[in-house]
Image (cartoon, rainbow, N blue to C red):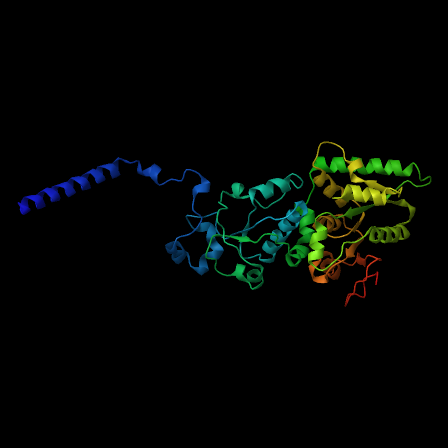
Length: 373
């Protein structure tokens, strides 16, 4: 009886194996090996893939399957407001430029690329969708690792991400000329609106200035609202209107009666209460024409001025760089936390002045070439 049970069990096993084989060969093998779409493809290489490629293959990833495009790719996690993303783009662009020869491919978050191209339509860094790569579950590379040369070594993942709020003067400042010439070119429609606004302010101003036929536009960016908390976090104090009054006087003394101040702010009520008394101040809200994002318009407007005054923050910092000319920025908190001070200390900052609020008492060291002591 035991022998009979054994034979029956053996027969059942054979039948199950045959059924599985029939099922296996009935499936369309060609479709079972394909990916439904590019986003479902796992970007992580297998251990065998890493062993096959080796460190010496890193510079030739374009010839390696199965990840010809999505390998040796560097991105970043966008953080902050509009101007932060502009500087983050510049920082990523700069770190790639600093690592020329290592064939690192930059790529942007899809939303970040979409937002930036509304203002700068000719950006060269592609998005994940444009490159055909996945941006899911990416490991981060730290600033310390970048400084230590990590990007020049073997990567254990085909795509790496820089952390959120990665704003780095070390890489951004050396790349500024390339960025201004090739990347940060404003959309023609936006430029048209800005030029109309400036022309309108010019015509209105010259009506009250007999004998003048030209004006000098000076951007005036007033950053307040939530930034006051950020400054307090770094043991600083927000500037008062007296900082701006002093800076405006300096500009008038330097350039004469043809100066027109173009004011943009995140606190219109406070700004108008402090500056409406000056006939040479024009507010961006009154200059905007056409249906366009006010933030984009203000950014482009300030960037098209001849010179700049700003308090602090990435918005005023970036527009001052793009505008060129002479720049006055405020010192109101720790020196090592302020991008404008780093820029003023660089060889590009010869026309930059860091000035304190005359109502404040701030002690600075090694700042003798700055005014307002």
